[in-house]
Length: 429
Ligand SMILES: NC(=O)c1ccc[n+]([C@@H]2O[C@H](COP(=O)([O-])OP(=O)(O)OC[C@H]3O[C@@H](n4cnc5c(N)ncnc54)[C@H](O)[C@@H]3O)[C@@H](O)[C@H]2O)c1
Image (tube, rainbow, N blue to C red):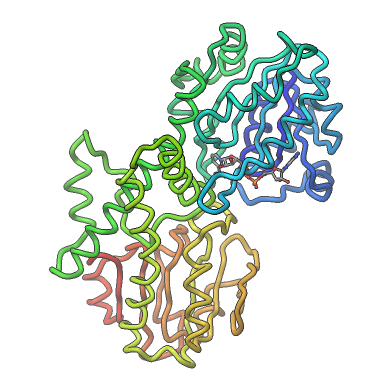
C-alpha cells in the first residue's frame, strides 16, 4: 500500500518506518526541512532504540521516503496518517496543526483516500475533519478513520510490531477492510484488532492514558502515606499488583507522570468533560495531585539538605521523563532543576542520551559521564530510571564525604544503603 505519514516526529517517524518494514511504500513528510534533510541522510533526529537500523534498512530498499513536498506525497498515497502534534493551550487541545494538515489534504484529494488520525484528538474531532473535507467535488473520495497510537517512547518499535491492540474507529466497511489488511501482519503475530466507531476510538485513547495516569498518581499518594508510617511502598505495590484485577504495571512510585502524552491528555479529557457537561472528577483530581507533586518533591529535597540548598552541588542523573528517550516534554526535571538553581544550588547533570538540554536558569552544567557529574556532589538525585544507574558505587563516584543520595525511582535497597553507610533517601519508604 502507498502510505503518507504527515508529521515525522516520534509517532510519524516510528510508525512510518515500521509500516515500510512490513512492505508498504511510505513517505514521511514534515514542514521542518532540517529534519527531512537529516532523515534522507539516514540521521535520526530523535533518540529511539532500534530506529536507526530500521530507517536505514528501508531507505536502502526504497520503501521509505522522506519529503517536504506534502501535496505530491498526499496525491500519490492511498492512506494518509495525520501524526502532527496536538498540544494543549489553556487546558484545551489545540487542533491548529491537525486542521492545517486537513486543509492541505482537501486540496489534494485526487482519488479515494483514507485519512487516519494517529494524532491524539478529542472525541468528535473526526466528525469535524469529515466536515472540512466534504464538498461536492470530494464526494465519495475519502473516509476519516481514527487509529490512535499507543506506542511508548523508548519501546516504540516493539510496541508497534507487537501491539496489545490496534484500535480502528470507522463506520465505513471499505475503510475498515483496508485498515485490517494493512495491520494483518501484526494481527497474525497475535495483536488484537479492535474495530469500533470513530468516536469510541478517539475516546479509548484518552480514557486509556487517563487511567494509566490515575494508577501512577494513586501509588504516588500511597507512597506519601507510607513515608509517614515507615512502610515500603514497593511492598504495597507488589501486594496490590498480585491481584490480577489490578496488575503490577504502572504502580511504581516516583516523581509523578510526565512526557508528551499523560499531562496534556488528562487535561484535554477534563476539558472534553466540560464541553459535554460531564464532571470527570477523578481525572481532575489526578491532574491536581500530579501538579502538586512538584512542591512535595521540592520540600523533600529541602528537608534532605536540612534547608541548606544555597551553594550546594546537586547532581541529576538523567533529566528526561523516562529512560530510552530524549524527550523532555513535561519532565519533572524541567521544574525541579530551575527551582533548585533559584535557591542557589549548583546543578550538574548527566544524561545517558548524550544530549545537552535547555534549562532556563543559571549554574547548570551538563556532563558526559557519571563520574564527572557526581565528583563534587553534595546530593545525587537519581531522576530517570536508566539501567546504567542501577549499580552505582556511590562512594567511588563522589569525592564529598557527607554526600547524600535521593533515589526518586527506588532503584536501590534501603537496607543495602544502610549497610554501606550511605545517606540514602527514596520515595515512599
Ligand atoms: N510521543 C508519543 O509517545 C505519542 C504516543 C502516542 C500518541 N502520540 C500523539 O501523536 C501526536 C504526535 O506526537 P509526537 O510526539 O510524534 O509529536 P512531535 O512533535 O514529535 O512530531 C510532530 C511533527 O509534526 C510536524 N508538523 C506539524 N505541522 C505539520 C504540517 N502541517 N505538515 C507536516 N508536518 C507537520 C512537526 O514539525 C513535528 O515534526 C500527538 O497528538 C501525540 O499526542 C504521541
